[in-house]
Amino acid sequence: RIGYNKPKIEFFNGCFEKMNNPNIEGIIIIGDSLSSDILGGINAGIHTCWYNPKRSENMTEIKPEYEIDSLDKIFKVLEEI
Image (cartoon, helix red, strand yellow):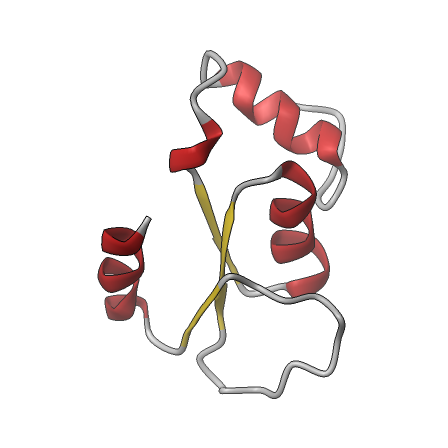
């Protein structure tokens, strides 16, 4: 248990600590929530991928680095990072 929730940076820092402080340049968060998963990833300085299977329009100011509509597309994203 970390004690914080996404999108707080403390949540991600707690995760990184449990992972023995990895190089965050190689970390990506894949999530379906712009306001918690993607914003949290942006706040933490990691790669972000919005899982958007319904192809909803992003009407927010939160801009993911990548967007996919099916999980099989994640392999292409992972090759890019």
